Amino acid sequence: LHKFGNVVEVHLLESGEPLDAVSSDQLQIVQPQSMDLFISTYCLDVMSETDMHSTLTLAERTLKPSSDSKEIFAGITWGYRDSIQTCVMTAVWEFLYKFNRKRVGGCRPQMLEPYLKSRGWEVLECKRTLPDSFPWMVSEVICARPPSCCGLN
Image (cartoon, rainbow, N blue to C red):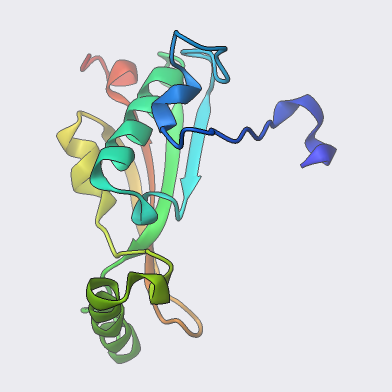
C-alpha cells in the first residue's frame, strides 16, 4: 500500500473490536465523519453478528454526513437459484460451515441488504456476481449510504 502514500493506512486492532477504531478512550485511528468511502470486502461473512453490527456502526460513524458518502460491501451469498454449480457448492459450503467451519475459513453466505436496510441504510445498488471457476460461490456487492447521509438519523 506504500504507493498510495498518506491516502491509505492499515492498523491492527489488538482488541479485535471494530469500534475501538473510533473509541474516545484511546488514540483514534479513524476520525468520526472523516471519510467519503468505506469499503469492506469479504469481511462481514467471517464475523460474528455482534462484530458485523459493530463494523456497520463504525462505517456509520466514520462516513461524512454527505450525500456523496458511500460504503461498498462485498461478500459471499447463497447461490441456490443461479446455476447447478453454485447450487451444489452453496449446499456443500453450508454443510461445511455447520460442521467444520475451519474448512471454509469461517465464511458463511449472507444477504447483506436486509442488515443494511434494517439499520436505515439507503441501498443504492446491489449486484450479484457469478463465479467463473471453483469454488463456485456467488458474491453480492452492495453500494449504500448510511442513515446519517439520508436524513434518517
